[in-house]
Every structure is written in C-alpha cells, then in structure tokens.
Length: 140
Length: 127
Image (cartoon, rainbow over all chains, first blue to last red; front, side, top):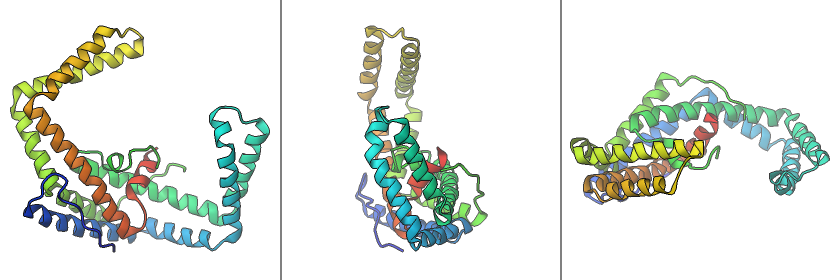
C-alpha cells in the first residue's frame, strides 16, 4: 500500500482536516485492498503477467502501436488510404490473435466494467461524479 | 474495449460505501455540504441559479435549432453575472470546486495502493 497523504488543505487547513485525511487514507487503502481481492482484479493481474512474459504478443502490440502512431494524423484528417487502413486492421488482428493479448484486453474490459460500477456507487454517495472529476478526458 | 457487465460483491460495495462516507466527513466535503445547506435556505440565491439553468437550457435549445441571437447570449451573460455576484452562490461554487479538487487526491491514494487508476478505468468502462 502506498504512503501518500491526502492534502486536506485544499479548502480548509484546520487540524480537524488532518484527521479527516487519515480517515480517508485508511478507507482508500481498504477499498483498494477489497478491489485487489476480487476475481476480476486477480484475472487482470494474471493476464498482465502472461502478456508481459509473451514476447511474441508484445512485439505484435509494439508493431501495431508504432504503425498506428504513424498513421494517426492521416486517419484523423480522413486522408489514410484503404490500403493503410487495411494494413492497420491486419496488424490489430495479428495482435489480437495472440492469446495473451486478447486475454489481457478481455480482463481489462472486465475490470473497467467493475470500476464503472464502483464509480456509480461513489458518485451517488458523494453527490459529485467521481471518475469524471478525477479523469476528465473520455475513456482515459 | 468491449463493454461488459460484472457484479460488485457486498464486501467491495461496503468498502466503496465506507470510502464515500469518509470522504463526506473530510473538510472539503463538510464545507461543501454546509454551503449547499445555506444555498437551500437562500431563496434569492436559488432563484438566481434557477434562472441561470433556465436561460442555459433555452440557449442550448435555440443553438440546436439555429435560432440563437446576440440578445440570447447577452441574456445568458447577464444572469450568470448576477448569480456570480451573490455571496451564497459564490460560497457554494467555491465549496463545490474544493470538494471536486479533493477527489483526484483520493483517487491517487487508491491508484498508488492498487497499481491501476480506478477513475480512468471507470470512465473507460462506461463508454
């Protein structure tokens, strides 16, 4: 568990705020521990390890990413040719064809779905949108 | 990522509820709750905010219909200026921003303990 303290002096720098900060810190750590114990999170961790140790899958991913970066400006401008788009699709399929890669993406999607539901719980209780406030850009 | 449906276990839900409860007890959130309560009691301030919401809604509708005029924008600016000069509204907005600024710090604690950013994943999972 990390040791970062919440800066409770955003609004109020009183001594009471420091107590509230450690309360939040403990609750955040318990929340993280509870999430880490779920099957969904454990599956994601296992899939991450499998992918990290699969050199072939990592190479396929790096190749896809590099080509995507090259073509991104053209795609955004609508100027990418059909051949270039097909090439990128093929590279993505090659990457996804690797068992460890598809496993990781599937596990990540499950974890994202769980986090989305937790965001609903937190946001409803807090009266402010938790994930949207912490991560303003869409889809991270 | 494909969208999936997963269940939140009772233990995890309880941990999330306890985290929310502790955040609600924090200084930024108690200040926010107090400002919200004062705003609720202030009829003038609430009327100003209602007016802003109404004009914003009107302007969005007119914008979508392509009928918005310079006068509509001036009307919006005018009600916003009035609201932003009201002490109860200013206090509420300041407190709301303070509470919102606190949440990324809470998320950072979770991220450091867990190793993944729950907020980023939560947004991705909602898309």
